[in-house]
Length: 487
Image (cartoon, rainbow, N blue to C red; front, side, top):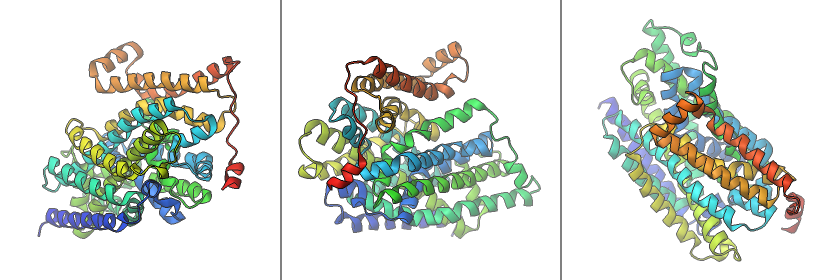
């Protein structure tokens, strides 16, 4: 039996395991909150695994290896550094507060501070659904790319994985995700570093260099690229739905805090190892331009290890996709269905809520399949899709936690202007002539600094408008002790 066949067989068996977990978890997710945040009962080890797993998807492993191949090992780990440091920031400054407050989605904390606000919930829905679906598409691109390296057509690989994700997500919700994450992260935590070791040994055996050759590039060869890859998730990780709903699944505030910190450290380590595989693979196989991670693993690792590593990376992409679909369900159900259409009721009082969760997962999953065939670059698909949501919501949510002087006028003005700025950045990515025109005006690296500049603009808008809003109500900070005492 060939290496490719063994890998495909192992991958198929793993997909069956994931479906089995989904069926097992189905009867444990009868309520909407159970479906979205696993009943808030996840312990520390599983919290670290699930928070790391949502990051270690296509961007960190497949995208990181590809970027490492193209730009060197350190640029290849920038994205994992963005996600990892973002998780650590989330753990230190946000996760404990959010978990104590008992939020299900990020806008719940905003509502605790400023009161019900339909505009904020609508903006969250219309910006975040495309954001989450766009990152989900990136996971399908990775799945198709991985399986195509072993003889399965790209389209079939993407479709098969998407179908498994949809079934798995719609049945078991967050609990099925967390259990699957524990298994796949244990494999990834051993498999990806082993893959890097075997790849570097192959470079040395071929007389093409050593570990110093792989790791010996400058940490920041290009400042613009560093900013482009680092900034998107550095601040937004605390309030992006896929990560937020995972740490909200923790059983208490301390588990949420340390789960984020531990998950961030694991993410950066595995991202660095994945980039090393890409660099070593490029040295060994300079003619290979697509699927460098999977190809290098298959050529340099023993067959069984290669099968396990590739399957774990595939499941990592699928796990990320799973939680992205659940995040989409949370956005539609909690932000729109409950908070816009039924603001006078709790989510648990809406009998259609859990059915809507599952329906949203199915519809978003199918939509992602259709979009997959129009995207090619994994990291571009991830980063560009975040612009409208991060531009509109990230700074507003951060200020709801830490800026005492914020007024409703200041926050809503920033959301609207930030949305316009985010849409413009997204349009520049999706419409090449527009991006080229901006490059001619502002310089070749203007887009690398785009989101960073938008964050600064958003902070300035909230502070300026809130300061000038003399008659605006100054909302008190959320009293977490009062929330705990009232339970």
